[in-house]
Length: 357
Image (cartoon, rainbow, N blue to C red):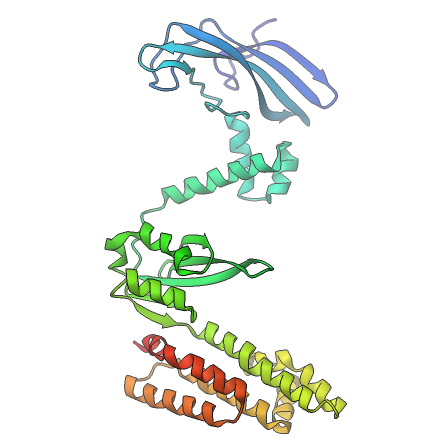
């Protein structure tokens, strides 16, 4: 057969020895051209001798909607420097089962489409596309400058139902994700500080987190200069779950004989948890009516607003007075969920105060 690839870059150094089209598949057999240079994949030097040859099945770009399968005769060279080594090819990786241009095409679309769509577009297996996408992302990460953070943000998130969590660490200044690891224990997050190294850990000035003792202790051990800061969002979210939700359910149960009122309280969850400024006019009116009718809900709602005020930028002495006042009012409220929350929050007051500095 005439050499159809002599002037084409698709399969440099090879020529077509046979071509077969069946249904939706194009099968092409490639043979190395005798005049093509043989380059060692190890040292990159030209070689004169072939150690052995073998056949490999390769996927290439689809052609006119048909899958393209290449059967390529690959040469293993006898390199004087490296010993027996596979020859280096410009269009195929050393152990690859797909051509470089197909891998680049898939990587290009992985940045724009879900993996499942790229599988349909290329005809490749999901796992193959996933590996291509991971290599693309790793290449981008490796190209980033070495991070030199001074402030960190640590948070946990659920992987799926069943109380399985992972931890993410960000650079607070750039919002760049620095590390993700499964788990939320001290042992789980320790590899991050080991990766950061003693010198960079010594430059950390502050770490924002929720009230996670494991995070707190590990930061203290590895970042001696860092201030631990408990962020408002996590504390208020915890207050909503442990105080407002609990009191709402308790009040609905207490008033179960008054079914209309009990139903109103049961259905008021999001009304109580949302910020008042985010409510429409009718929502604000219903909220005020509910709070006026129930003293316990009014108390925990007002105490939530006072708790938020503890994150306002004031001096150290006024803040300590505000904190002691809030804590005393919570303990004297007679509302058990609020008292328990205040007692659990008390050991963390320094992390809240650190937000002011």
